[in-house]
Amino acid sequence: MKANPTVAIVGATGAVGAEFIGCLEARNFPVGTLKALASARSAGKTVSFRGAPVVIEELTETSFNGVDIALFSAGGSISKKFAPIAVKAGAVVVDNSSAFRMHADVPLVIPEINAVRIKDHKGIIANPNCAAITALVPLWPIHQANRIKRLIIATYQAASGAGAAAMAELSDSTRAYLDGKPYQQTVLPHPYAFNLFSHNTAIDPDTGYNDEETKVIKETRKIFEDDRIAIGVTCVRVPVLRAHSEAITFECEKPITEDEVRALLKDAPGVTLVDDRVKNYFPMPIDASGQGNVLVGRIRKDLSDPSGHSISIFVAADQLLKGAALNAVQIAELV
Image (cartoon, rainbow, N blue to C red; front, side):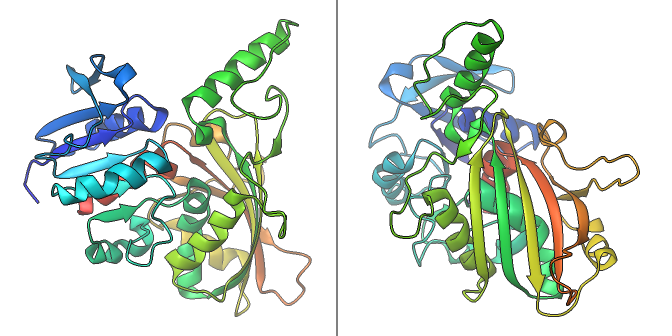
C-alpha cells in the first residue's frame, strides 16, 4: 500500500458517503487523491474535501484504475457488481453493504475486536451491520474475560440506517404532523413521526425474524468466532435521526458482577461509560450522535437470573459513524 493512497468513495452523495469524507478529514487519513463516485445523475456535481471541490464521477467499470482503497456504501447490488471489478483493478475494498459479510473468505471486521483478520483478506473486507457493531464493541471485553453464552437484544434503530431519504422523511413527516398537515410516506412502510415499528426488512415466514435480526445473529457469531452463542434479537425502527440504541442482557459462563463489568469497560477501546444512577443519566441518541464511541450504561444485575450469571446494559452509538463510516475508515487505516 502506498504511503498516500488513492481512495475512491462509492456512493459519495449518500449519508454514509458524506461521513466517509468527514472521517477521512477528521482523522487526517493520508489520502493522495480522492475519487468521488456515484450514479450518472450526480456526475459533474462536487463534494468538498479538505477545503477543495472534488468533482463527482459516474461509477463505471473503469472507475478503479489506479485506486488503492475503495470505500463502498451504495447498496448490496452495486457492491456485488463493482467490488470484484475494483479488486481486479488492484484496489482493496472495504464494503459497507451486507453483500459479502457472510462469505467464508471475506473478513468481517470491527477493529477493536478482530483487526487481526484484516490480513486474511483477498481484496474485500466487510464492514459489519450497524446494530451488530453497536452491541459487540462493549460486549467483546466482557466476552474475553468471561465467555458470553447467551444474548438477548432489543434495538432502537435510527432513520440513518435506511439512508438519507429516510432521514428526510422523518424530518418532513414530523414537521407535517406538528403543522397538522397530511403526509404520505414514500421511503418507509409506516408513518414515522411519533411512531415506531418493526425494522423494515423482510420477515422470514418460518422464523418470524426479519433480515436485520438475522444479520445480527449471524454476524455476532462470525466476529466472535463462536457459533455456540445463543442469541435472540428484536429490531425496531424509532424516530431518531442518526444514533442507534440497544437494550442488551447477556449471560456469562461464570458468575459476573456489575462492578466487574464496569471495570472491564472503563478503559475498553471504543467505549465510553455513561452510567450515573444518581442523576438518572444514561446513554442517549442525542449524546451518541456526532462522536465515535459506543456509550454504555444502565449496568445492572438481571434480576430474572438468580444464579448471578447475567447482566443488563443499555448502549447507544452514532449509526453513521461507528455503525458505518468510522468503522470502515478505521479498517482502511489498518490496511
